[in-house]
Image 1 (cartoon, rainbow over the protein chains, first blue to last red):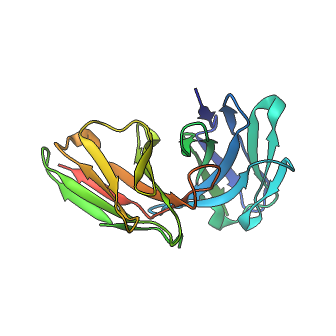
Image 2 (image 1 turned 135 degrees about the horizontal axis):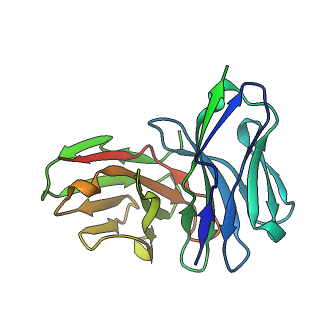
Length: 114
Length: 113
């Protein structure tokens, strides 16, 4: 069965520091992967996606993610965090064999210290 | 703004009642998805409709039902409500049924008292 694991429930970083949020997935076929961000009281906004091709994908707000098939990972990175990046981050895998339903990880809450 | 709209934004009701949540997808999107977000269960896929037809079903309770109308808007009906149904309900839409990113609405926060 498809599943997504985000091992870090909460991460705190200083403003200007680099960031890496971990995501591991389990899926029988080639996955298509997403990172979404949710600010308090808001819906989910797509940061980036991976369908195929180049395993390093660029997203909005300076985020990037790298797909590593051998490690079943799709980690999100940002070289320099801004205070406005404080939010909840969700990794998701899309399962095309039954519609287009997404399986979400439990999320990582990011706190940014000034 | 994702282009997906949901109404109402907040809903407070009592146990045993029935409510209807409404979603309008982005212009041109044929698929609508419903998700439930709660503290203990996280983000759970409930159901997907594509061009009026049910396409995929997830962890949706029998007390819940949904439909997509000819104008492509969708409604999620929740009946015999229980305290545990209190959650944030998101609607998302995508252009097609497969291999597409989903755009999420702002959600409806349901509180069952």
